[in-house]
Length: 273
Image 1 (cartoon, rainbow, N blue to C red):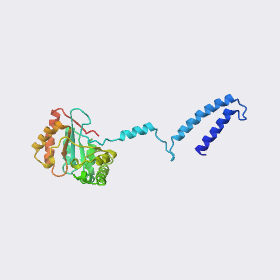
Image 2: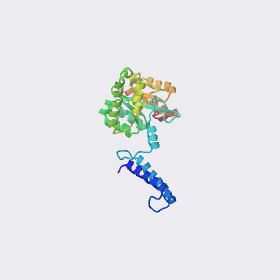
Image 3: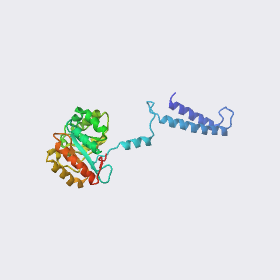
Image 4: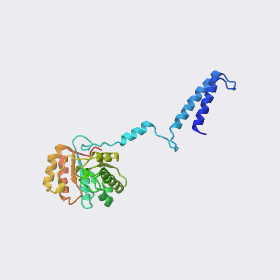
């Protein structure tokens, strides 16, 4: 029997009870009371029916569903601040994972009790899933750094940008065993409004930096260290590299910087997601 038929019959019965005794011998007053009680019960049934979807699944209350959607919303603005607030530094490592250098960075960070964000190139993650899993197991965060590290992405079609971002995210997630990829960092900072929106809709906050010591140019350990110290007043997010070539200088610089950060009273945080 259909829901519409049930409601129609209930309405007809209700009208009959309000008009008279309907041949039952009960008083009109008594039947009106019965109608009121039945109406309340029917309203409860109707309310329950309305919360069931056509395929039989129970629909979540609107408030709960809206709250869940709000919780999933990610901002499109470029993140550079520390999640913890206060005097903090966010270490970010780009272009890995690299089978030679990433394990050395992981060992250094672990020895010092420091966490970082690893911005990974999709194919590198695919080739080194054990390293991606180790990054996650050590409590670090994952960041999408595109498929091909194309620093001219901001001059490419939106469809190309979307493929570069989302395919890399998929490879990183697969390599990690399903860990969340919280950020997207455009190669060379080549963001566009469209790429930021694509990333945010995929659950990734666009990630920038405040401190760029140009360690990828290998200017020397002393220069990398001094660049970081000089630029730190700009903000907490430090850009370094654990992939993309020899990272001996970057590693040596970080070995010196971590104790210095601690001596200066800096905490280690993650970028705002």
